[in-house]
Length: 437
Image 1 (cartoon, helix red, strand yellow):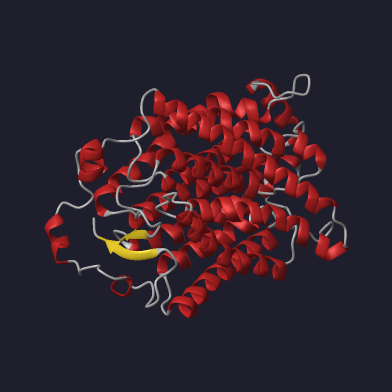
Image 2 (tube, helix red, strand yellow):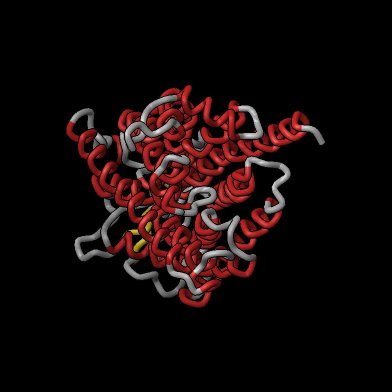
């Protein structure tokens, strides 16, 4: 096969993978719309469109050049054409295909934050946030991890498809922004207990989780950028096994701990497994991928409960799924890597590099996001008014409900106990009452 044929097949593979990654935005939209209350379902979908429009343009115009441009005096620089010339010499595919693939990654970072700030953030504030993250925040830390000149790359950090660069960054940034934003009205009681808001549509959320799971094969296997990579099928297999193990762990944990299998936790468990294996999918054996997924499926539950105890409101569990398990998955490479892992070779070097790398990326996300959120709060305002929050953002900000026949919801059961809601006879720690809305 000649060089032109190789480039042609690589191009087809990467463009298909990029489309799968971008299709994940539909998964984010459905997942979030199903997990928030009915009166805010349109708003979370609109935020995903902000990511796909303003965010994608900001990354193309500014972020790509920062992320993949050369260092100047050891510091990243904005240089789209410098990045283009360098990549064209090293990639066996057209630059446009690579840019499209990277656009999907940049948009995903913003969408991670979207769920954590649902139901109370100003759309104008979110638009500013999306542009800043796509243009500057994500590209800078992404430069450190994935650019050949990046200092974390040169130290030997391994993050194949972004457990640190995308998920840990997005998850911990979401934590900082949600903290500044504050919880939804009525979410926490004065004694620290949590009021559970019933989600609008669990089947809709599950459809979103399925789409994300599907798109993740493009996310991970597509990161080979090479249709002829012999490691491609094992990357896809590891992706599947970790997701299955994560979902199984969450399902069984909630079933035996709380008496009933919790659907939202099972979904998030599968997503947590996917997040955790993203860094190491190209470096670990299938049995290690299963173990990584099993651990992630439990960590996501513990992480969710910890965030609640901190009185930080995260309606969809984004911090636990992406922040906690992005961090764990990055460290897991240092433990299970076939060539350099602590458990496979006895060497601790890689795990120390991974620890330092994910810590740097996480602190960057936390610090910058906190500063940006405070700045937005003091200028254009970060949060909607109390009246808008009570009315619901669908009508207050967009003038249209998610469902036109709202009367049909008047016959909903009285969610006066967790048993009626179905997450267990024994309440999960800190959860005492379910509120309609």
